[in-house]
Image 1 (cartoon, one colour):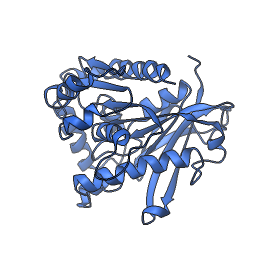
Image 2 (image 1 turned 180 degrees about the vertical axis):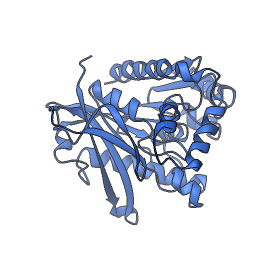
Image 3 (image 1 turned 120 degrees about the vertical axis):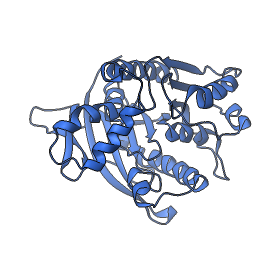
Image 4 (image 1 turned 90 degrees about the vertical axis):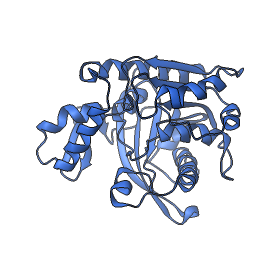
Length: 310
């Protein structure tokens, strides 16, 4: 698999068909970088940021056509909380797009603006379809010229935790929202599935990859992975499952990196430090030395899985 240099951009898009719903969006893409291109920095809070290891901000687009992966964040998450994973998938030749889901972001939950589950499901499904439209230039432009390099015949969806649930229900539809039929496969990383009806899981019409953290106590294998896999494994579709022996709930996210970096970053509020400590407390013993390997395992499995379905 060809490795590419990675560009990154952030933008805002407005869905006029849904009461002008505004989404913050991050895009990672194969790029032609130059020495003078600025390294991407991800701003967690005003004045608190960290540099990317591989992405360059607004670098020129690479030539060619590339498949699309729409990535959905977890409950209380943010669109850029998976930068290492998204950068790596982009480096393997994908355009990766992740948007916030207003009503279910960290800020929404901290300020009491979070929405109920049914509203959240409907909004999330609208978000991922709108982002897919934006990526192929059907409704808005995420970045000048981006639609010209996206292969509209190879579109995939994935997500973490509630984003994994989003990936599944996007392919089936729910609460009267129709299925998004353009996605050829779905990825659920430490996916929250326990509230989904068995018949809905059985009706998923595309191959599914489940990334299961055996040390996950939030969406534990017993409550979320095993029941869903029991159903999926009986399907004729080529579903896959990867068990992560040292994986916790945040195994696919940047939170282990945040935990490493935060003590050395000036100006991090105590509230944030306390939040990171709570995540560390819920992570498997020894995650500090295993998280990079666990993340790499997931990235490689995603590459293999997506390549098999293009």
